[in-house]
Every structure is written in structure tokens, then in C-alpha cells.
Image 1 (cartoon, rainbow, N blue to C red):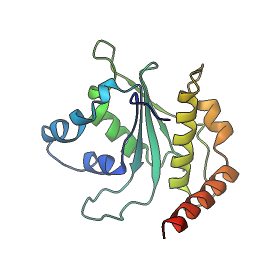
Image 2 (image 1 turned 30 degrees about the vertical axis):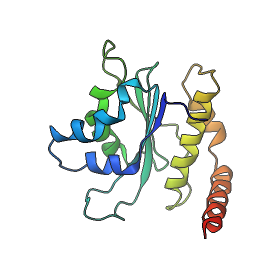
Image 3 (image 1 turned 45 degrees about the horizontal axis):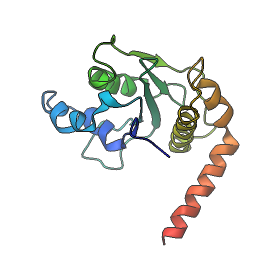
Image 4 (image 1 turned 120 degrees about the horizontal axis):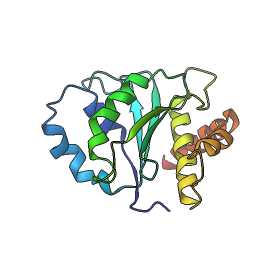
Length: 176
């Protein structure tokens, strides 16, 4: 069960911040109500859509995670860092709102060891599988050295992603 110390941010948040909205408007409307400074773990899906007018835009998804104890943002990209510029842009937009105000500014880390997709269409599933692995790591109460990296490497595989696709399709079919 997710507690209030963890927060999964919707993809719309990334899209809004990634576009040229007035910077003075963003904190009051989008960031401050989320109370991100109170969260221990925050997961942001990242999309490379540069046009908010195009709802189905973008070609790739990745994940940016913030962990308060380590005071770090980590970008996981299943396509060799394709979304790094988008992740860094979001990091710069939210870093001042994260973590303890008495601590130093959180660092950005590009995880070069993220599991990689073997095709051009599984990026969203890799984001979901990576988010699940990170939340399981956090929920285990045993965060260890290296943050969640070994857990992601063990739990996010092509077969796990294929099973996740089947599971999601089953959920969608049950909604009909």
C-alpha cells in the first residue's frame, strides 16, 4: 500500500512543465498543491512531447525518481538516454520544491545501467515496471546501498515487461 510519503506524479505534469508556461505561474498552480517537499519518494513519468496542443504527441517515455534520503533525482531511460534533455528540464523546474529546505540542492543522476528495451514500443511498460520496482524497494523498508538500482536490474526484464503487458491488457478487457 502506498503511503503519503510517496507520490506518483501524472504525465500531464511533465507535459505542462516542459512547455513554455510562465515560470511564476507554475509553482502556485501545479507544484505547491502537491506538497512535494513533504514526500520521501516521488516518481515522474517523462514524455518527449514538446507540443501541449498535441495530446497524443511524443514518441518516448522514461522515468525520473526523487529520493529524499539520498537527496537525488535519478533518470531511468530504457532507450539509451533519449529523454535525458526532457528529464533535466523537469529536474530544473522542480528541484527547488523537493526535500528538506535545510538540505543542499538535490543532485541529478542519469542511470546508465537502466534496463533497455529491445523494440521501439515498450518504453511505457518499462516506465511502469521500473516504477513498480522502485516502490517495492522503498516499501520493503530496507533501502540499501546503491538505492534501488540492483532491484530495478533484477526485476525489470523483457519477460517481466511482457507479463506486465498481458496483465494490463487483461485489466483493460475486464473494463469493457
